[in-house]
Structure formats: structure tokens, C-alpha cells
Length: 337
Image: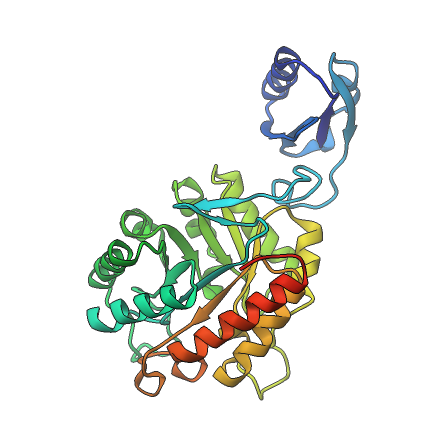
């Protein structure tokens, strides 16, 4: 349920409503707009009589929320959320580009790549210190050493760091080094992990599972939001379909659909969405044209020797070209990059 307060409702009236909600055993989510305050009631509202609130001073109306993802829905928060990451804003007029290698392989590799993507126009640096791999014999990442290298790259370039966390007991460690905690596609429904990053005080980048629906993605975001973390960035990274020519199928539909359903910022990952570097530029442009708030792109100095995802990684000069193309599309749709 959502309780819409009247324009000009006093703080005392708002407090009276929230206190009553708490007394009844429900949670509270406040959204303050420029004219009105909207109060979300968190819990099983089927037992709740809306008239309890409709007669209270300052209340304009109550609205029943149909989507199960309540905190993520636009009914609770009509205005877009802007996630702030060390001065970078995700979800406003400016397109954000996150770039870097799939895996941190060495200090030299990451530092050179970090400088290259910053020069080309990247807003944040990505790089995996811990890597979930299909084969247990594949490179699993450098672990703590990789985190330390990422932190060094941030110190040299000023780029905030995005890296994946794979287990609840690693959230505290990764949060010491990362500016954004990434939940990978394979862990989108790892509910203990979602709860753990929900309790962390760091923004979370939540990737859509390769066989997950839009609603399932939003329900996973709900786990993070309901555990107290409002800073969630959604990422469409391609889903598995019957098509085998590309690694995944980039769901362009998901971008405008998510922008209608949720106030959370949405970015796209054309690298995983295609699996082929020669398709990344075109799909990146399509994602921005569809309304994405940003991109996550894999960049490697020498893709042919990459320890993971070399086939979908752009060389720095190709990434620089992509940034120019994306900026042109962003300008055409009323955005900047």
C-alpha cells in the first residue's frame, strides 16, 4: 500500500502516519518529492484496512500496490533514483560508462587499462578480482591481490571501482576496496548474498540472470532495498535464448520496460549481451537509444591473451571509438555522455 500525503502536509502529520504504520507491525518507506511525500507500507497489506489512514490529517489518498516488488516500483517512488558513486551520478541526464577488463590479471595490465579507459571517457573502472567460472579449472581471479590492484588504479586515475562479490562472507572485504558491489548474473538469486549487500553501505550493481525474467530481476533488487540499501543499479546483460550465434541475446525491450516499472537506474552490458567484440559498439548504441542510463563494457589491452572473455573485449582504441558513437546517440536522444 502507498499513502499519498497532501501537498503541504506537515512533518507532524507525516510522523503521525508513519508511527501508526509501525504500531501495526509494518515497515515504512518514505519518498519525498518536490510537492508531496509518499509513504510506502512494507508487509502483507491484505490484512490492512486503508480507511485507517484515509481519515488521518494530511492524507490525500491510499493506493494499493499490485507489483510484488514494492520498494523498487514507481508506485512507491515515482521520481527516478540517482545513485551517487564518489561524485559520479548514475540515473540522471548524463550517460555513465563503466569499462575495464573482465579479470584483473596483473598490476601492469590493470593500471594501463585504467588510464586508457579514463582517457577515452569512462566514468568508472570495472575488473574482476573474484571470477565465477563455468569450469573449476578456469582462472578464478587474483582475490585480495586483485582488490589491492583495483584500489591502486582508483588512486592513480580517480575512477571509482566496480567489482564482483560472490559470497556473503566476502562482502565486508570487497566493500573495503570497491566503490560499487557487483552481483553477477549467476548470483542474481543468491538471496543470502543479496541480503548481505543490502546491509552494506555501498551501491550495488545487480546483473540480470541469464534465464531470469524482468520481474525476477526486480524481486532480487527488492531483497537489497528491503535490507536497507537504496542504491541499486540494474544491469541488462543479455539472456539465454535459442539463438547460438551470439553468446547471449541482448534484451533491448528490457530497458524501456524497466524504466516504466522501476525508479532504479538501468544500464546495459553489450559485451556479455553479444559475446563478440565486433557487435559491442552497435548494441551499445542501441541500449542508449532505448533509454539506458549507462553501459558496462569490457576492455583489454590484448584480448587475444586475456584470461577470460577475450572474444568480447574491445581494445582501447576501439573503446574510444565506441565512446564517440555513444555520445552522438546520447545527444540525439537528449542525454549527454
